[in-house]
Length: 222
Image (cartoon, rainbow, N blue to C red; front, side, top):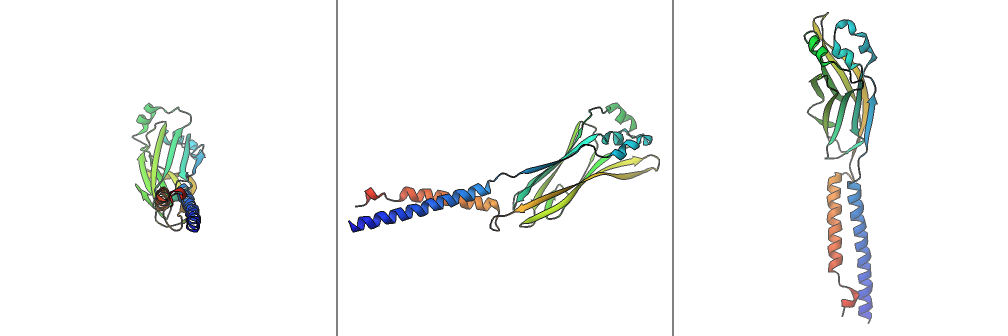
């Protein structure tokens, strides 16, 4: 009888530790899979200065003044995980005349430059994206980020610049339209990547479940 009681007490103690192990495993997995909040910043008009460039006979620049800018980026990025910043331009008036663009292209070859001024990340395809202004209703630029530091808060700026041919001066000019500040936190759990913590939590959870299934019940003890 005494041996049976000791075995029962020992079995109960083991069960408590196993339950605690399962809870810890679930908590680690939950922390690793915690959804990442995204931040959206919007600028209704790129620049009021563009409305005063009509004398340059540049329809693209005039139209850019009526584009809405939307920047979407993650509030934080996990260590060893990647994040994405999207920069979207939308024609809020939807009144762009494609024929007019072709007429003035010979005198005003407009391109858009999106410059991500930030440190602490590896940026693909690069910190500077230069594309022709398509004149479509929507145009999107995408930056992919990979943290280079283990943790901290990284601050930077996103610049939108118009590059155009000044017919009067006979040269290309750069016209900054707007600059938007961004702030992204780099997160690690116990100095480790949340991906590793998720894996450890999953292994611990499975191990405890298997251990419970292998423990003999008190009724099986002779």
